[in-house]
Image (cartoon, rainbow, N blue to C red; front, side, top):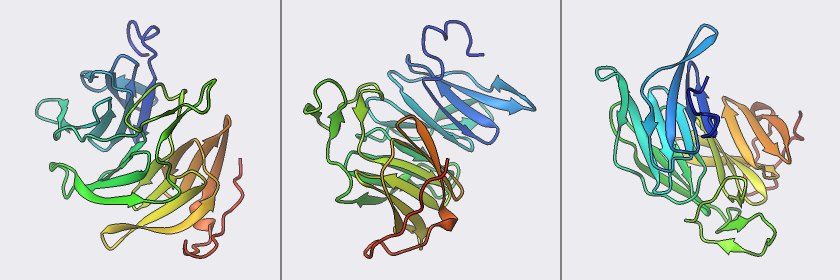
Length: 244
């Protein structure tokens, strides 16, 4: 149940799940945290109210919330019994993000920026910025006029925009969707390196371990990354046909 009034505020506008915890938001900027108890999900803490929040990620006891200004990180405080701000707002363009226990990946429309934290109670700091000629440099309006372009710091409803760079991160593996291909990265010696590439780009990415789920044209496909041949990206790469 989403509580009173959620029918009118589009409860479930954004959501993410990590183990027994979930964050769920509406289109008015209220983010609610739920915890699973057997087969029931109950609200775990007070709402996190962020003006114009439109996306949330959860990992362990941390929550990342995206709004017009950038990214706001919260961490659960056992003493206060609520989620409190972890650090100042990270100002960024683009919309795709992925939060891990130790790393945070944010996309603009031409790059992916990786942040890292060294412990549970310390802020995330800049680690690495990844660019590629395959990443788009702007945002395209997907409406009646396909020639209308907007700068990468302008945001509308997810249904109206085709963002060029999508990112999904889980532990030491990261998938980045560019204009034409999907780039797979792994964490090596403290930095993220591209290890192989899948031909084709998709609208959304979800990564769990070595299993990559992608969506395109109202269909869902899966890749088992362990089955993909790790071909260096400077040579022709090998991709597997997606299986439904």
